[in-house]
Amino acid sequence: MSERSVVIAGTGQVCPVAEDNRSIAEMVLEAVESALSDAGIDHNDIDSVVTASVDIIDGLTASNIAVTEVVGAVMKPETRIAADGLCAAIHAACQIWSGAYDTVLVVAHAKTSMAPFQDLMQWAMDPIYLQPLGVDFLTCAGLQAQLIAAGDPGAERRWAEIAARRINAVSDNLSLTEDDILSSPILASPLRRDMCAPMGDSACAVVLRADTDNKDGRPRISGIGHDLEPHGLGDRDLRSWSGLKRASNRAYTMAGIDDPATAFEVVEPSCLYPHEEQLFLAAAGLDEKANLSLSGGLFSGHAPIVAGLSRLATASKAIEGIDGKALAHGTWGPAGQGQAVIILEGAGA
Amino acid sequence: MIREEKIQIPFNFAAGTSGSRFLTALRDSQVILGAKCNVCTHVTVPLKSFCPSCCSDDLAEMELPAKGRLISWTDCPGRGAFALIQLGDKGPILLHRLIIPPSVMLSELNPGMPVTAHFSDSPKGHISDLQGFVISEK
Ligand SMILES: [Zn+2]
Image (cartoon, rainbow over all chains, first blue to last red; front, top):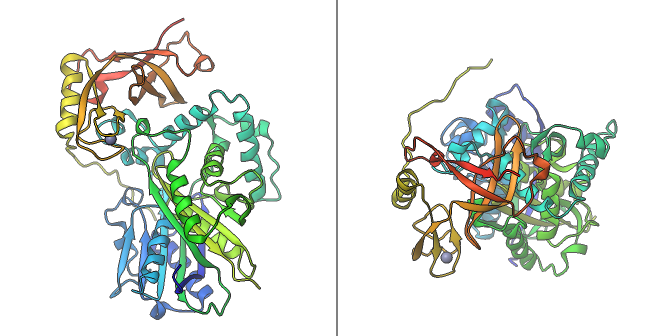
């Protein structure tokens, strides 16, 4: 492990809402200003910027050019990652570990209210064999869930219980039951509407900084890992997230974690459906006792691409000032094709 | 304020050498082509020029049966049903449309159920020349 630590110096999140009336740049502005303020710095202190966005969601090619000014990337090195924002954070951390830059701003945005998301995501599938059939990410999630549910008669009720728990954790006013979840309409069997984390518009910004003495006690990144599976669902074993297994093992090795099941105070996965929690726990070597998504995780609302970076921001805040570890997870592509993990270590009080 | 738009641009996606061979076989002979990797033994469908598992370009073309078994399925109300179909014993798995006859309930579907490919009467070298897989009636 490099003696040049990378710490989470500041975070800023624009809470996901179904439709934010502002432009993408205005949403990003709020996230960036909030992260810089949290870090106690301004744009002059930022050496480099890494952004995460996906063109098809923005309806614009090179979707980062729409945020160049607002992330302060004019006359600065900017790198754009077309994957989950947690991958952007991994690349930013590598820039700092390499010694290239000291302070890097990571920004992710998505405004899904601009177009019918399912129709749009068909264009993220193979254009010869899958897009013409109408296959989208939800279809792929349904196929994966059904594969896991087969031969496990208790799965649907167990998943409904998980969905109810996540939804109820979002607000004191909510007390949904498994039966409520199981009576919501089917979207992609066996997945029902209330088993799906609600989607909307969001932005998130995180400042990463090189730190040799960690004088302000911010959590540091002790492990990273990311991985891809083949695009085609028929070319992988959908009963497990093997990409996440490889990604988390890389991160655990780097962080010196031998027993992940007992390692974390806080675990923030990017799970859109309850069956993904089951896949996540198994692949990451965790069990039901893990402190997973205590504030509801993505069931409090999410935007793709932003989700993983927002998990990092949330996990970082949760262990700020305590002596404990946290895991943040991001995923992108159909049925968990892309996977990323960051391990954080708190600096203590 | 919102500026309304509908993005519609003519676009020509290249199926490539193997993809064109796959679509031609589908159109002209109602044959589904896949491949087996000579390096890692991974089987894949549709036919590809490279192995999606190990990146090797040493693949043996396979003619796959038009019958298979159901691996997984999902019903998306308003959008139809989709399935993962294994073509042949230990064959590759294809994601395609699932055609469920009115006599079969969704709850009656089971892994391993036999399905049969249903081909279009007016093929045009498109993935929909294979219209989907039909669950065998009771
Ligand atoms: Zn191979």
